[in-house]
Image: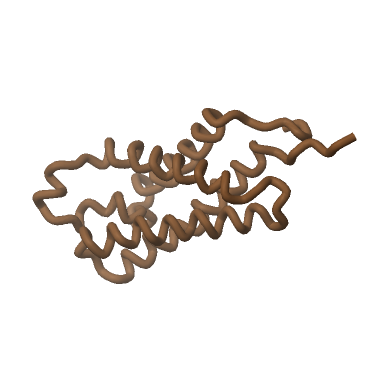
Length: 142
């Protein structure tokens, strides 16, 4: 992207949504990489019967993408180590939301929950990197 040029909000939202969907897609290939919101087999039967992973993945990914856009507004483009800061914010929200979901709704082994939560590290890093890249740097004054 050209220097000083920024992607619009819809492009940023779509990019973040796509990355989150891609990470959720890994759960179909390698179930041990499933995030907490897709560990439906560990949810109470009443809840498991009301939801579908095919619906849960895109909806949750959209919410995570919207949160990523909000986080993007917290760290200015000129901030040092911006990707690292964005990653930390996104990972914090991931641990809060997915950790709370796992604690309240899942009856999963601790190792499964730990792996599922750890999956938020690369997810947060990739989303942060992509959004920072797409948003670009502010134009320097002439």
